[in-house]
Image (cartoon, rainbow, N blue to C red; front, side):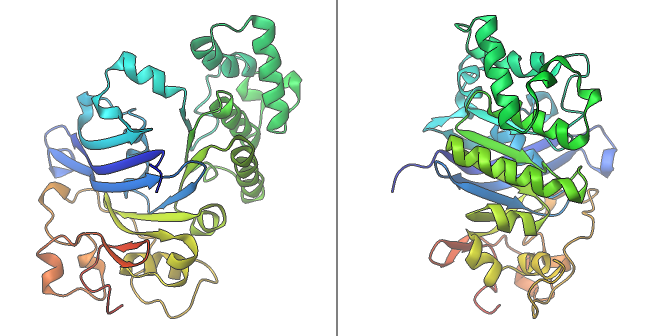
Length: 327
């Protein structure tokens, strides 16, 4: 097998909080995450709000500052451990990894024209380009995402949410990155616009050959765009596998609950609903056993005493559950 484009191994992200905040001083947002992405592959990352999806994405891109916590483990991109790089070395990899944000308008500088926003990464990473060459690339990219070239002279506040997300996608892909991380890219948009943006992302990815991590709590969209899916709960990866197999035969009770909560989803999947809010007051540094045990209809005493390791229950299907063979 060829080496994956991105490999995350035993990643832990811990935040240090002000004394008394959430009643605890430490908060383990990501706990031993394991994840890989092949070249040109689309991988889905799903879980309810507060499960650690966005924190994991920002840790991969090293957008989390040491002042807010600690990061340990390995994040290998093209074989290089990103956590071992200093800021100057990391910059050389930044052009190959880009992020599409959840809130399209908030992610754009309201004081910069769209053209200046798209040209900024070109100025940083492609200094050999002349201003006319940059302008040509910017206008071509705007056309590619379904906007007029004249949009380059306007400001973000003049566009709708869907148009702003198209601009955000254009900014992310103008450097032709090898990895595109989409963090809830359609959750802030009207339902009528979501499909257009998802199709645009798929078209852009297909044309560029980039790998993509698609983060969402919308399992219907993830099922549509992904070849493989990772399920995260309270900072831990609890199940992963090929999209078709995982949706057809989920083995972790949490995954079953998430899929059962999909309108018109498969029948016969029992378990608690997957859309209740996570209680962030819980101290994850003190958690023993399976994090889902307090909500799990299948939990036994052992579930609260030891952390279940990810094990391969079927070919390329991994589950962290002591009772996966029975479910």
